[in-house]
Length: 92
Image 1 (cartoon, helix red, strand yellow):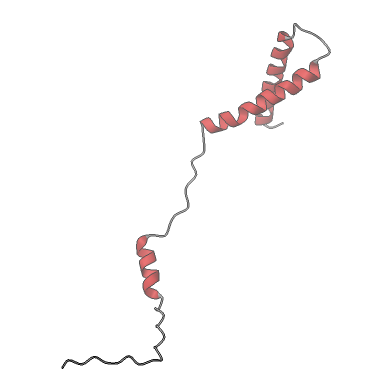
Image 2 (cartoon, one colour):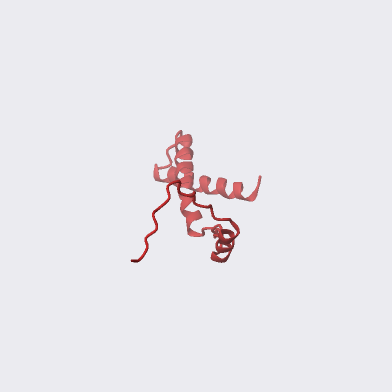
């Protein structure tokens, strides 16, 4: 059995025994105590994981230099020529 499973089993066992003691050492409730102990231990697990969160690296964003270079590499679309000619204004 891996070490983590032994620790988990041991913790559940300890909590189940505490429940047995609190019930006044009443026999015949071992499964209820065990299942309640599992629930208690499992609800504690996420809290322990949050106390020591793993540091995850955020995905890198493209640098402004790379974005500028990419924009410069793309040719700009030409505007379509107007079909109607505009009158030219002349000074008088």
